Image: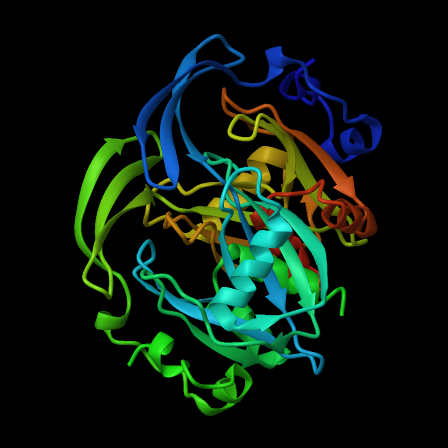
Length: 204
Length: 204
């Protein structure tokens, strides 16, 4: 029974109270008839999916496959400062402040190892108190990119940055209230960074 | 002066205190030499960018252009319940719980109008107290998708859902603690939803 039909004559407030949420059958949502690889990119592959709608029509949908997935980490010092990295993002054509992050080396890599590596390489810091914060999907409408988000407490410096040839990264320890002001003003935009920091603040 | 060189002989903790964060010159970060459209998709376009690295080498990077941008809204009732929508996401091949969201009708559409429309169409609810929460970029490494995130307080039902042919959406009013448990357990994954809800909880 589709929701569209079911609510036709109901007040939605009453409906929400009454209806049990159960799995919808495949007849009720779009299903994929075929998937065609259009281009194998550098870190992603671009596909076109032919989708069958519940009404019997078909549509072409975009699908971006992120090959390896990613991990990121919210690094916080013992005295409550947040360590962020700043870099130029060509996709946005501007600089961003973000939490340390990177692609996994392979699909099977432990995301915790990836997160620890990115913290060490991008900032020169390490932590002995790392915990999982979030399992995040960055953009569910057309892409499967999964990002595991960790919290690193009591971070401490262990050496210098270890950057690759494409990376030029500034680091800065931020007061929490200054980060929140950036988020509230719309000047800090990166989704994983906002979600990670706000989740971390519930744990410290 | 590149950070990589600058920190070579320094303790990073001292470095962070000492160094002013200033704009890096274009010689210090990757720059785009050319951009080639590979495929014009349905809601996105896929490009290959030829990037010049600071060391003089070139690399091919992916760029996904999201044509119109999007908006979403965290709907909260007067008694503190959060209204979420559940739908099948073909890119993930599973159902998700999300805040109401959708593409803008055009690049120039006011994102607030888009957010109000998605709330109305996907849930049948409206609000007279809507405020901006976040300016969010969903996946900064390779895509320019921008999502404006709003908070709708004191939502009230005004009618039934108004879904398009591809949509099959369940709605449910959630207790805040149950939503937080889903986030903490990794069962609620959508980035804009997690960021939006955690940001909203700082405002109510």
